[in-house]
Image (cartoon, rainbow, N blue to C red):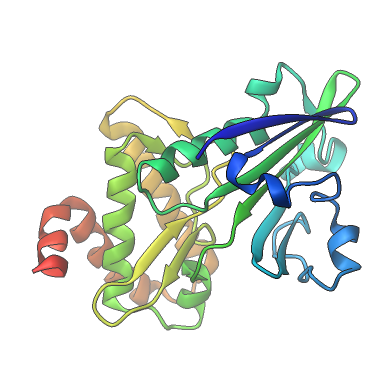
Length: 247
């Protein structure tokens, strides 16, 4: 994957050179895709993401939005400290590095930064990845032991590669279910980064996911406890999980 940069009105666009034939001035405009019946309904969150399907295009378009109290005031405005330090460009490059390393993440397509005074607004496009969220599967009581085990194994693979997910929650784990070995992708790496190896941030990441499960399904505590035991086993003993699923 080769990164290319294109000047656009008010800012810059970063994209995969292999996708250059599909990248144009309107690629980040929901209205453009909506007029072509290629835009889904908003995908959860704060109405900042859509799926785009047109011909051989199957992408997710996401605009950067603030949450919590700052989001009520600033919404989608961020202080500009340089293109290479902008959230869309940082996430695009992180996704590229992880994708090139063979980690199960969405392939980055393009990122855009538009300047507004001392700040900027940003967006990113990634390829769609298969699966349903861990949150949905938990709520609908459709999670299997294979799902929990695959989740633990792949989180360990990310951690062993030094990848810290800033918001590892049940909505950002996508699972493609299979009888013996489910496939797992992690999504939404805004503010994620590579970190030096130590156990502190790893356990913090796992604790965040565990709290998310309890928040998503507070009435499924028994299911969560049983599933979490499977997740921790494959996380703590990834070689055993790999042996079982390759032998």
